[in-house]
Length: 480
Image 1 (cartoon, one colour):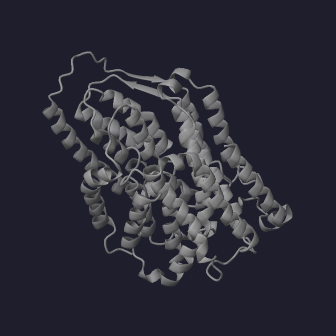
Image 2: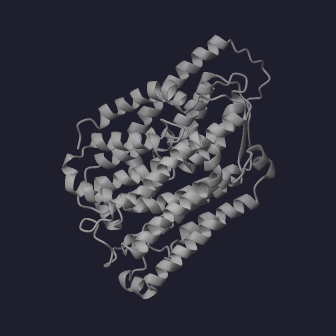
């Protein structure tokens, strides 16, 4: 984490040196975050886009992130921080000294800090809660737990919900655990479940940071979410019921039926984190701005809660959850590079779609976002297609007011992008961060899971793809 803080400090003070405080005061008289105002010197990307060659670092980083854990695991585990930071610095250098657009870097720095603050605080706070379920493992009990997990994932994120529930889920099914139990957990809790709020899944939070209203998603996609959850849970129930009968599981009455929770005070910390999401001057006018600093009251609260919740956590809960900082450390290092390198990609996508926007339909946004979210990380994929959809109307994703204006257009495009990014993250192990975390925890518990291609061919293609095709046909086919 020290390297990340050093990098952030270097970039921040460089930006301050290039753009003095007085210029911000003149351009931002109301004291709003710099992501909410348009700088007079900022590039008009529809007239002067960045060099197409600057997309190369972004592509390299995403490809290495996708293939590293599978094909050169040892190298990637030891060198991903260096790779991510090095590629990110290429973009930083270009925007500071060649393209002369430091404000885009400052916007991105603000979003990165907000993004990491939320994920870190949710990860640490949920890690201090240990749940023990002493119930008989039945198909109905499993369905209930998965559905509850889907709801919780919208409150503490798919990462938080996955870390909170995967071990209780494994322990409850200890006498008859099968790979499909874990796969459906990834489908529902780690991905599809978190499609209703910006807290639920990283792509939606990035949209919120850009200016999408917090409750926009749940208002527009709740019916899609509910139908998909019901269908996937029904498929799981049939599979689990048949296996339950086939295995002839005969569990004695040695279950108390109790649910024990250690670290209950951490639910208060989670509540504080959720409330702090709204602590932004763009949402609540009386929240003070911190001026030129690339973070605000919201981020200070989140990092403070992460620190306090860890220091005061129930030690038994941390031990029971085998808690450590490695997963969030990996996310922090990878995304510092992703956030930096995707700046030119977002701007070029907006530039191209401004010219050819009339040919882009909701079908393209749904399948394009979905397919790329399944093989690349779904957070940057979401932003790229959001930039494309806005470019269709001549709007710039880096302009806060443009984002607010985009919400007034036909919602079908943002619906397609949001659903595609969150749902299709379940198609592979690499589609969303929690997928690999769940896989790692499960395998350390002695559960043999399918390989990357086994996961795709045996589970996601025959189960999820038909469901997602039905979703497309019912809600997006021929629209836009």
